[in-house]
Image 1 (cartoon, helix red, strand yellow):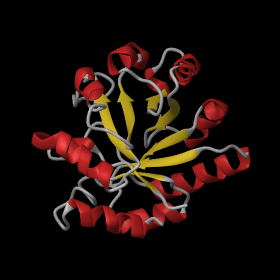
Image 2: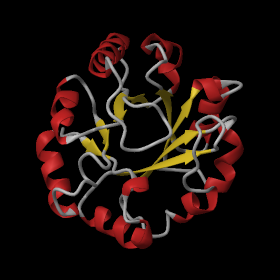
Image 3: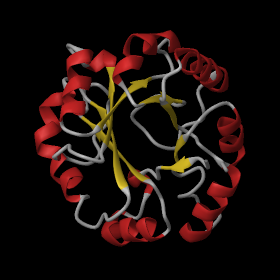
Length: 221
């Protein structure tokens, strides 16, 4: 199976978001990556809960891939209308009770995921593997687009893949951060399944969106 694409909406044309989402949907893109930040867990703010809820309106087949970079993430679930088909990632450092938060996501019909930042030991995920459908490996520090890849990210990806393989569980690996034309192929070879593509690839200036999406799929097949 080919790699799955999750373009980062924070890098999209914000003045024409509905058209952009419909275009990605028609191109067969699997996910739309939506970052939510509280300006506390990370020093930035992106889309509010109302916008994240309204992203549903133009979506037909594409699914929301919501990355919550905020303390006590469960307080936002109702406002975002987390439900069937959503993929929701939370950071264990941001949760009072990570197990309970992941359970809450599952009970809403969504796919719970655990996110790990570059400074988070990869072994941390072992405690949560039985409760998640994916692990979101941050290859940049959360909070801002356009960063260079954090050191040792490829090695961390390989280690994560080994941990998941040894668990014998069906868990996908998502990579987020400088998923560039130069890096995405190697990321695929090292075990990545879902790719958060932004300014260094799909939303770069090298290709029109349709051509960029097609090229990306070719590189992560």
